[in-house]
Amino acid sequence: MLQHVSFRRHFSPNRFLLTIFLFFITLTPSTALSEQLVDRVVAVVNDEVITLSELDLELAPAMEKIKAEVPPEQLDEAITRTRKDILRSMIDEKLLLQRAAERHLEVSDQEIDASIDRILQENKVTVDEFRTQLLSMGITEKHYRANMRKQILRSKVLAYDIRSKVVITNEQVEAYYRTMNNENSSPAGFHVLQFGSAWGENGRSATREEALKRAEQTRDMILAGENFNDIAKNYSDLPSARDGGDIGFLGKDEMADYMWQSISTLRPGDVSTVIETPAGFQFFKLLSSNKDGVITQAPLAEVREEIRTALYDQELKKKFDSWVKELRENSYVEELL
Image (tube, helix red, strand yellow):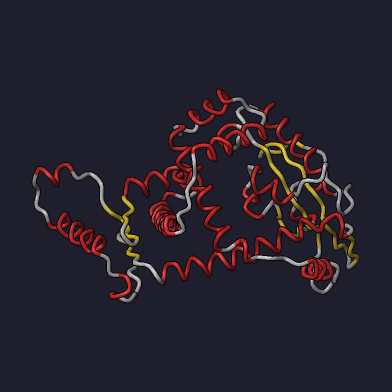
């Protein structure tokens, strides 16, 4: 949808020429030029465009999952909805990259190399193994590096415009901890963090043995003092990774048997052993429990960083959503899907 913006404020000769060009190719009859035109524009973002082929490339990883999980009669609707969601994400990314250009922020090849080296070291894989895994997923090294460049640039923009403005104080952490200990605000059940390591098309490891090794090494890192939320967010293969592994409060009847057997023997603050599940290898951390009105939780010192990370992520998301909204309002954005 075309957003209402001031023409004078956002007029640009380049954008004007772009609009004329788009209008021209839309009306051009079947000539040699139109016969060669196999792509089309699905969005205009200031002076840049997003093409259908670019959108389809981003959509491809989700298509197999949609086709496998969505009933045939709902397939078209699900694909249309997902396509629109991905396009909006691509628009936001385009706006973010444009902001990076305004800030004169850049990413060097050395920064990309350093990020990839760190990933290889943390996952205990060689360069050849890494390339083999990319090929198995149908991803070229060039495409991977391009995405890595965008991720680093995104991080720089967020650090410049948002992260520096998000501060979580000790008072906020302690206030949140007190609410966890309030039976009126703490749901019944067990507050659990989760980490998962899978293999094949569902995970980052090529084999079952590698997935097990990665889970055990990750657990050792957490026992050594690493932040569970940060580790899960960056390395877990489960959907809960986006929430730092936090799956909230669960009652016994809401857990799979393997999870309950692993959780039931833990005290708040404990980390379980690695177990094998239908989704790969997993382990858990118990933050607190509320059973029959009796609340037990880990000492503040043991969960302080998890609480701080959770509060930080919440505040960061609020500021990011507000920032993107403002960015859109001050930009020329048109969806043509």
